[in-house]
Length: 248
Figure 1 (cartoon, rainbow, N blue to C red):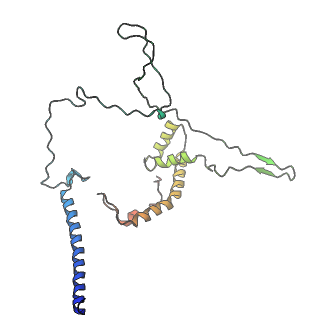
Figure 2: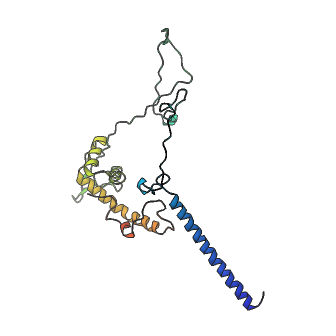
Figure 3: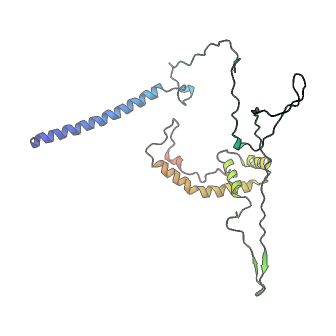
């Protein structure tokens, strides 16, 4: 194995080689990132056109070939894709009454009729459930006892699905109180006050506050975040601003 001096020399050289390998890997990664930055533009990334350098040449418009826009003669065309039969709720058969040329009456069935599907929305009506709480008097001690609302029934006037929709309209589809009120009235026939909308959203914010904190904590523990080209906000802006749903 050699003398102690030789072994020490070999170990030192091995350590130096590992350090050089790490430096080489870091430099190669940095070089790849620089090349990607230099080559990125509004044409191949989400950067705005104003970020292009002075030497950037925009794409030249191709000269027209004289043909009109759209499908050309002889092109088979592509219409909307038909839904499978298990998604079809009703089938109506239509037969021609007479020959379109000579007027002879026609009878029979076409083994492969031409399908034409129409997608429609049924009338949307809210389901109103009334819970009647009876109060009865004990025949022994004359004490009156009133029934209570079952545990699986919402204590408020609005059910969980309607409450979830109110929260969705204030978050993923950020509508104002008045717009949410108008949409529920015109689309669903549900009359709701702006105060009730605020109460529902505050309740949802309280229920989602803990899961939101857990999601943020999980994201902060990941080795890579903000891999897209959007700017990363400072840690102070990642704190919850009081509630999940903005209550104006």
